[in-house]
Length: 154
Image 1 (cartoon, one colour):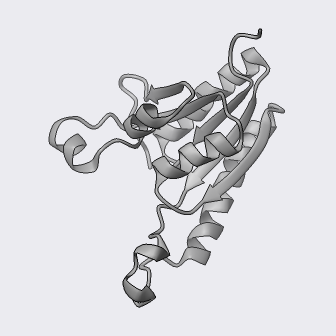
Image 2: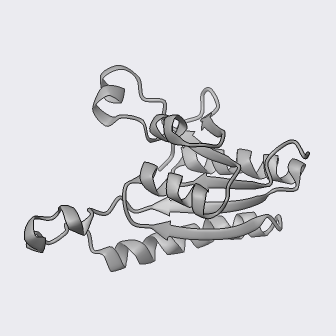
C-alpha cells in the first residue's frame, strides 16, 4: 500500500497565503509523484437564498468567473510546468462547501489550504475556512501559514 498522497486538492483565493500553500503542495506532489487539482470558490450568493429571486446579486457572476478563470489559469501554468496538474476549476458558492465537494469529486486524498492566521475577535467575526474544512473533510487537510516575517503583498 503506497504512503503519501496521489491527488492533492489545493484551494486558492489568489492571495500570498494561497500561493505559499500551492508552493508547498507542489513540493509534496513532486516528492510523492502526486497530481494537483486547483480550485477557487467565488463565494457567490446562492440563488435559492434570494427572496423570490427578486434581489439582484451584487456580483456580476460572468465577470467574476472570467477574472477568476484568468487568475486560476496563471496558477495552473505554474503547476503544469512541473507536469503535476490534473485539473483546475472555478466553483461558485461558499468556499468550505466547494472545497469539500471538489475534494470528493476529484477523489483527493489530501487537501492543502493557506491560512491568514486570524486571532481573537477577528477570528470570531470572520471565522476560518481552513478550520471548517479541516473539521468536515474526510481526508487529511494540511493548513499552511505564511513563513514568519513574510507579509502579504496583495
